[in-house]
Figure 1 (tube, rainbow, N blue to C red):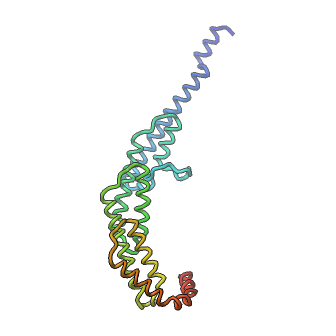
Figure 2 (cartoon, rainbow, N blue to C red; figure 1 turned 90 degrees about the vertical axis):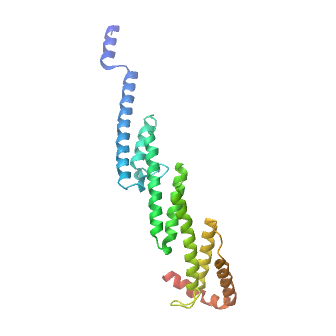
Figure 3 (cartoon, rainbow, N blue to C red; figure 1 turned 120 degrees about the vertical axis):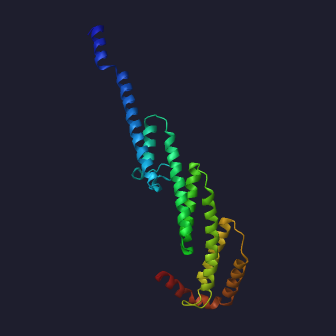
Length: 228
């Protein structure tokens, strides 16, 4: 086959390098379109209040857990394209929305449910830190309020557990109250209320005074706990 014929074939079908370059360019265009569509869907989700799925800092290893922003990022990086700054902005918006939601839910929560709200606060703080999103003042304030509230809740519950009410004296529950109060005081670096020391000392005195009785009651206490 002559040179003219080879030139004609290249003109019609292109060289292998040209074909590869064409395929890559097409793949990049498709990836850019797919990423743009995913970003658009994510924006609509976040604007309509479905932000929880997007309020995270890392792409999960489980492909079933990917959200639209994750898909957009993977599309772009997989095709050698730059990550759109919109992705980081939308993640930040979702995290800020989650903070606002946690603040609202914590303010509405009963004292007995604050443990779960504090778990939400801790998880949200971790996500924001990894994503480089500063905590809002309202979020930090509500965390300290929740810590103070839960300490007071355990100190009040201690009183009920150490007085002969409907369920009798429950020193093991009172001990849990003291330990929980101490944990949250240390976690929030809160000033220790005098009431805490009074109740802790009273509990220790009670346990020393009744240790023989409590030892005999221990099996029944465990049975009651397992049945609860």
